[in-house]
Length: 308
Image 1 (cartoon, rainbow, N blue to C red):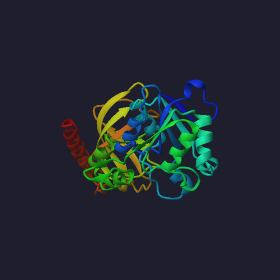
Image 2 (cartoon, rainbow, N blue to C red):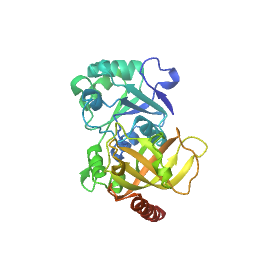
Image 3 (cartoon, rainbow, N blue to C red):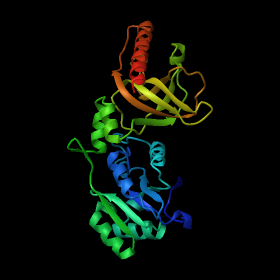
Image 4 (tube, rainbow, N blue to C red):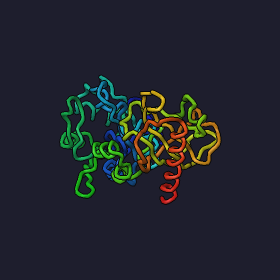
């Protein structure tokens, strides 16, 4: 997959894609339906998306809402067979661009799209004044095709990033996974921590969750993909997402213990899939009680993961 961070200067080989356009936060089943409709036999599959998310640009002080960072979104789109990822910088210039100018300057002159597929509720351009009717009209004038994907429902309810956030906030990762079509994953680099886990016999890989919507804080059974370095591969484990109340910390992070693993993961990139919620964060009377509970958590997680 080729990744582009602007619409200007695209090489001839990077033009002419059939693109799905949207934010694709989570790349859930609704997004996947849009992407599937964008597949054309005579054109490479492309994605037109934005970073940061427009909502983040317009309300930078609002609570974090992203289901995945750009890295995780890229990995998920690559698995879907996307050949060209146009990850456009959403800045003041793009936010102020009228809908017609966006079509003419970005889609046509910049990317030379052959076809555009969007969801039925897609809006674009300054003030979100452009919609699917605007896009269809512009496509007729500029000579590219348009497909409108209907919204996808599951059990009578529309699949949406909002519904997925709710499921995660309530500690229901399997319900989130049903709407996503894949496990909800947190991806990023392993950071140096305080090494308390190692001292307790449970060395953990620490990862930041800054900028992401926080699932319910607590302990999870997880599956872990080590994406880089000499230990690349898939592992089972248990992870604590939270603020570590035993130690007076208050900045949420993700600490993952990989079962049957020995090695150094610092600076490597991990993808941690939340499988089942085990329990909330707890404050124990002392370290022996904490270690006993961690052993129980790991035993329970092993059982859950063995049954997958």
